Image 1 (cartoon, chains in turn red, brown):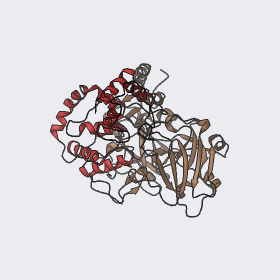
Image 2 (cartoon, one colour):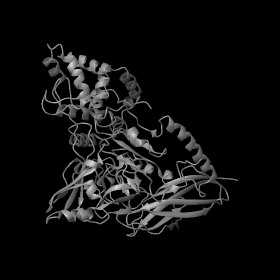
Image 3 (spheres, rainbow over the protein chains, first blue to last red):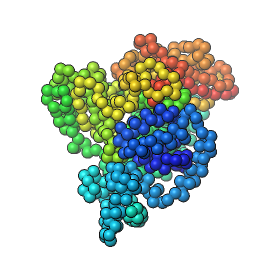
Image 4 (spheres, chains in turn yellow, blue):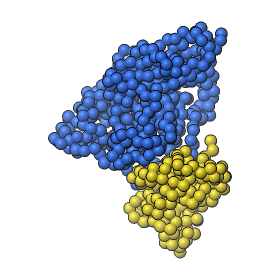
Length: 174
Length: 414
């Protein structure tokens, strides 16, 4: 069965990246709530452990209250749904990998969330030629200590090629 | 065919028997190709962390009529026409996970008891199994069971109108015996259970819920290691779970490893943000009020398990209606059926009273004397006189749907 995608709009990518870490995005796609209810839902998710900054909470809440609102269902939003699915399929393959493996639940490009920002990683290993191979292995096997004591979980499902692709992308985020 | 997805007996109409046989054949083929379950929502999920059991593994033994409503977190059930059993078998028991299914080692499993007790305990599973145990048939039903019937839609997993409950036989130790062994101190009022389910992110809090001490000391409230005579399946809490009979399923913490005696209800997201309903009814579409109360025992409810929706019968034949009725803390007083959209009602025959928290099976025969569509309604009444409503009171999180169930069939001219 086709994977349902979020309606495109400001905040859609962030919503997809953050929410799909813990639950399938269909939970959002089939929901229609008032803004007040979405605010409650976001607070509930934070208490369930969702790693979100206040800015991210604001962006996702605005997105959901706009495109998944029970009081003002947007006809344009509905029509755009199929278009979104097509766009999603053509999205950056690295972003797809990051989504599928829940990387964006703990990492962001610009700032540290649970784990370090990709920009910090890129900066630290800028002049280390051996870093790429080491980091690719760390993606698959997990690690702890390089950026603090919160462990990074292993991702045994990643292929060598996928790990390499992600690391190359991260190291160009300086 | 000897492998139907629903038991076939003389009361099931011939057309239905053929249908079931056909479904069984198709399903057997589907099972061989790994498509055993109908999956409504199937995302490409992120890779699960180590120490978890994949969905495919826990779903493989499920009935071919089992429908998955959400793959992550895993939620699914059969609907009423596939639940025509006196005792819910493992393959028809509903699933509602909050997190991911853990892969636990029974030989290393320990139950820790602490908090307001004289003697904190650490009981290895093997030792727990040497305590006096008992077996009882008891209801467990997700608070959101039937949620998709609410209008406007309520937040949460869209349970089909009739899924989300089960009444298997459980074997284990009375929680009261464990608490007596630990010695409950003065001032204790609540007992919290902690599960070992695994979160998708390291920041996910553990699944912890508490119940009042009075329910914890009720002798049917148990810590169970067996379901229908065998080890708990992994998806149903292996190697150890709590069973709080008649109450919302979230109280029956699976994969339990911790019990804590508290002076007040546990404070945490699974107590404070979910499983709550407004103290007084609110306008449909409202948000949850700040003074909402926690959900406890289920109100009176029933399902019609025979016939199934759309079953076809011959004019002049005999219709056998079967179903199950229950009320969280009360006995069932009566079940009435209507064949004229509620204009008149007639009492169904109730099976003898079984275990304290088991559902009551009901049955009624009706000669089919008129052709055409026929609608069957069932209305259970508990010993306090509470009857099932036409529609349940709307609440923001969609709990306690217990309205009169309805099944339509076709009576064909011979």
